[in-house]
Amino acid sequence: MSLSPLFVEKSFGDLPSWSDDDHLAAFAAFHRSSFHVLTKPYHSGALGVDFSAFADAYAEARTVSPANRSPILDRTEARAFFERHFIPALVRAETGGAGLVTGFYEPQVEASPVRTDRFWVPLLSRPADLVDIDDANRPPGLDSYLAFARQAPDEPVEYFDRSEIERGALGGKGLEIAWLADKVDAFFIHVQGAARLAMTDGRLRRVTYAAKSGQRFTGPGKILSEMGEIPLAQVTMQSIRAWFKAHPDRVDEILWQNRSYIFFREAAVEDSALGPIAAAKVPLTPGRSIAVDRLLHTFGTPFYIDAPTLTAFDAKPFRRLMIAQDTGSAITGPARGDLFAGSGDAAGEIAGVVRNAADFYALVPRTLVSGAAR
Image 1 (tube, rainbow, N blue to C red):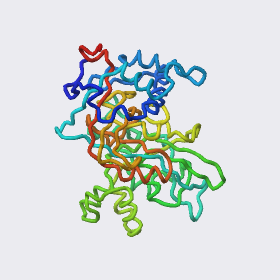
Image 2 (cartoon, rainbow, N blue to C red):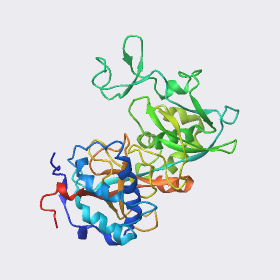
Image 3 (cartoon, helix red, strand yellow):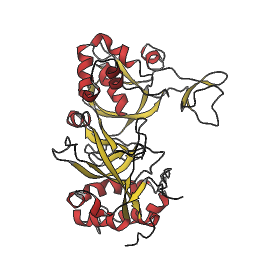
């Protein structure tokens, strides 16, 4: 496997404000991945960053534990760790311009374990008749995009879509995990793929992505922009929510145009400072985990993101080392990423406004770069 020509080798001196970053915070996220890969290796992305090339970096990272913090003791040594094992490479966007970052977060909403007059919108678990689809079991004529389908008597068929499910197609099957008071809250939980639920009985529960109905995602922001309701430049999570609040009678009209529906499973809240366990099978680290195109990139890859117009995180230009630990259906392309902002309303205020041009620098294992032993 060879590196894609979309990678342009650089030096750490080329990375804006590299020396000012908190590399120890990024190392903590990388450290979590270093232990997970002992159980299941990550898939190598199509751009040529071979998972096996991370072996030395992961092995050294695993020497750090609560009982033995050597050799990573502080930010300086964390920075030295990344410089020792990696070479930065600018990731060129396929369009030739800058890349793009958006934001995501883990909502926290009030929920009930049972349906009531107030709590009437369910979050559903994966149905028994939902099957994974690939080239081996895809029947002729089934949309090649669909990775999930419904097991019918003869062969799999397209699964119920959002409007059918919300109108009762799965009623009576006991799939309800919890009940929410607001359909828009539920939809944004679908978009984020996870949530913390503050239950009316005092418990704190977490749900995370289990599967989806399979259809293509169509964002309400795109729909409202094309309808002339919100100018494209002003589309944010906040502006979309404000539009729904002002037009409660049109919520279904807009949301049902997004046919994709998400199913959930319960997950433990083991560390309240961390986010849910995502596609890379480790808890997301606020401000340090990034979702990337998993077909192109390899989970665990460090990315230095230079987004000078993004100031929502800490009121200064966003220049941070992030670790690839999640993906998403809207995250496609080599220079495209989704920044995890954290959990709760404050994180939502950050994530909801992030849509900024950015330069992506992948930290590529030195063994993959010719002449990199320097």
